[in-house]
Length: 494
View (tube, rainbow, N blue to C red):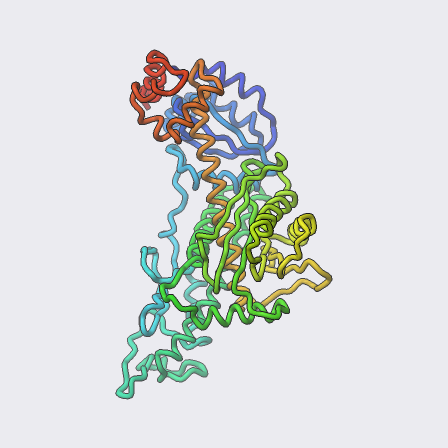
């Protein structure tokens, strides 16, 4: 099937608004080939289809324009939001004509292999698929090196250039030069004592990473508000890279089947901080994910003894309304989750964590009241200052950034956020892949549904033979052959 005529695209442009947003250019098979942001969608998108401007474009842009068969737009409230959404969609779709986002390897990371007898803190630009922990990436290498030097003095840890020596009595001499004075820490120590130092340093670096992340976010938004979009885009790349590594760090799983002492300690401290009578051993956390009010979904993750139990994860599509309302969405999914536990006579978790502040936790409490269930210990975790919010009259609580109890809550919250975003991306990907069927003439909703039900996915449909397509109810050999040709037509030359 030929691509739509330019006049059809121009007609579609005429219906756009002058609001800020993101546009997604697609080829004739519905594949996203370019994602861009715009201060005014109508003005920006129309520039692609203005013949008088064509020769002023870079050859790469002219090649892109030749490939455009359709486009989608997503309106947002502001230019900074468009900047963030553009970055998220580029990371998700990796379009052919977008410049790739900055690779994590351009920035320094801190690597710690906790399986070593004496874990060392080393700098690297390459993240390997191993059992090490990675912190970063960090754009400011000078600041990072100073921080590591400070950590060596503060925690008595080894850096990457150290060559510790084993002593005859089995202990270790960490440094054998002028660095023997470790500011209050003995230079001769056992492996067990040193491991405690290393774990304390990891907790500190977790908190430091989050501080830097908040600073970078603030700088990025400030640059966007000043219309310094090149600077904002560069900072956005660093923010995404740091968020990615932090998420992987949070979900790091050790392979010891027992509960490590520091996890046990974190749960105990958390219970004490929240005023709980018993240590919280089972925890559930909820998060809502959407892009500008579309594809609203929710996730629930489950931790047992401080570790994720993915068999107990749940994900939800919002059913009670259409639109963007985080509070209503939270009320719906919390109600659905615990109504089901009540009906199946299953135990409640020890702790329920809501990703959000006063409004989100109020919605969750409302859900418990509606289903006539006494909630277990219920808290919110507000991202801005990592503030714990209670549903009663207690004042908000801020734990130290290096608190094991707060770090446990952060791991739980970050895993819920990752799981919700993954589900959101899966639904959006499925929707956009299926939208290519809109361009095939004569395919109504009944036949379209029959195709997807028969093959299960667009990928299977694309690889099906004419004979396999003809087996679908409502398809004869002629239409099956036309659809097969539609999917396998050669792309226009670039």
